[in-house]
Image 1 (cartoon, rainbow, N blue to C red):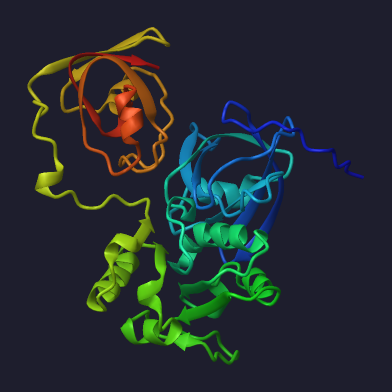
Image 2 (image 1 turned 60 degrees about the vertical axis):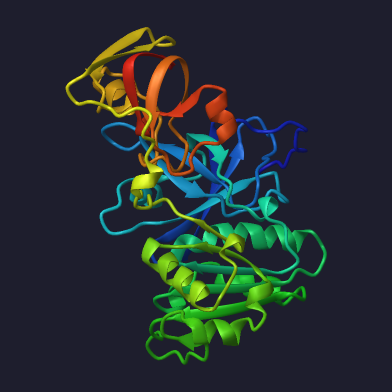
Length: 355
């Protein structure tokens, strides 16, 4: 018989391991894992943020980034809901091997994709596939506030059986006013009648789902082609895109004007990186990233996306200059304090890193 202890009035930090306490299959190749802190500390984060998990797969740890699907309004545990794609290594390891009692390390929480940063009276959540996870977190957060929210919740999937969280969301919508669920599928499941939307998300569907979409704050998450299609729908309808927010772990294509022109790495120029905490010095070229140079020298810097999005590889630069082109994984305040993202920073000359 398990004993439930009174939560400690302390908050978890990523210096402490997470312990898996349960898991739940959600859909084909989709599973939710529930974690608690070993010390009993509570979890504090913004709904919609993500964690980077250190997965002890054979051959060395992998770092994978997952959105937190639980809500900070329920702080005694934390969940991530993961979907194993074809060829997946880290997520497949979780589905096959991560079980209650096992402990893993994590980094975060991180990210700014949250309604906390964009409060509004009305919301339109649009997602596809596992992109539903931050929407689940934010919807639960509003549900737990006790007041009737105003959410139009749109999720697109291949089939009804692949809609993640469908039963949980329908239960929540039956217990409070203000959560309107709109499911869109490409095809129905065999021998199961489907009365929801059929096809792909488009302007006509949006007009039927939320006639007041121009008044709503939009949050979108899913594969990049899906989000591109959503953006085109909204732009075509005259939506104010300053009120559109999206989360993606795929780097957007950089435009020429986005690339800093103050310093340009030269592949023929040498660079030296001193990692002070580990006592390692790496010789490389200016076109090598700090992350690649560290790995070549035998130093493991945790990293997730390797595209400047997730922020897992954030380290502090104490001396020297780097050329960094990121995709939102670091804040201006962090940069002012000397932090860089190792995955997208090229050393210029001699650089000192606290790692």
